[in-house]
Image (spheres, rainbow, N blue to C red):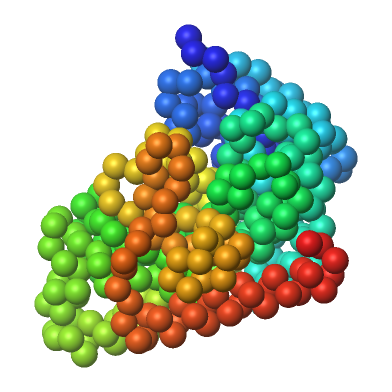
Length: 334
Ligand SMILES: NC(=O)C1=CN([C@@H]2O[C@H](COP(=O)(O)OP(=O)(O)OC[C@H]3O[C@@H](n4cnc5c(N)ncnc54)[C@H](O)[C@@H]3O)[C@@H](O)[C@H]2O)C=CC1
Ligand SMILES: O=C([O-])CC(=O)C(=O)O
């Protein structure tokens, strides 16, 4: 059997943690490679994480090489090959994710530093806790010895929501849809982009025109229904479920890490990555782009054409990311 991957999960006693840990232990994230789980909680969350650790034992997962619970970041990130930063307060009805910046931002500097000082050299970090993009920026800023491209923020849930809404609208299987993209912030300003998507090999633009009786109908569906539905789905779930998305968020985290380590097989996906200046996004902002994964790294898909409408929407979302960076600077978090 191969050497286990050490995976640190923060907020392991919370809702997403409860949905995520069993998927990781089952092999959904890293295939046949055994995993060692290191769970980090704040003191008041430790009992819940310990209970989950007992249930992980009881599941007798053949790939589970061990579970430890910590309330100390230095120990929890020790030797981590993968760090899933989930632990943070979720928003409630009526809040935007950016409203959490002050409450949650302070978590990610110390955790970035603990990753810098204690994680394995090949550590890969996924930030889930909101506002995810800017929290990833904060963590990266405190980890100068870790290459910036190892810090990512989760927009895979937005990507999956876009696939699902398109699949429903066209009555076509999710598995045949390619090259959807989420640009910008994991917030209501994000831009879900279908301009280059195909379904079973056919351009989605044409399929939408057939479905919605012409170009005007397709455009109306995109602008009035699809984009706001995807961009505000988190709020819709909070409204209907009474709590923010948990199992779907865990599932997206599995997808993100699996693709990062094993590579993408079928076209683009979406991830918040540290901008290298591509598409005019200021360097250092953690922005969602269409990406592919190969050789163990995310690569921003280059040369994607964007019409004036798309460019304006993306610019607005990037401006919000720049404002969030200024806000965390003003708070002394970076
Ligand atoms: N990026 C995305 O697509 C999504 C992000 N989220 C975000 O994920 C975060 C977690 O959501 P839930 O699991 O539903 O929340 P939850 O409240 O159920 O669990 C959060 C857990 O984090 C722990 N925690 C708080 N501060 C911590 C720290 N400094 N270190 C370690 N653990 C800490 C808490 O004790 C709690 O057990 C929220 O910020 C939520 O908004 C949720 C869904 C999707
Ligand atoms: O909307 C929220 O607050 C939780 C989240 O990030 C999502 O479901 O996308």
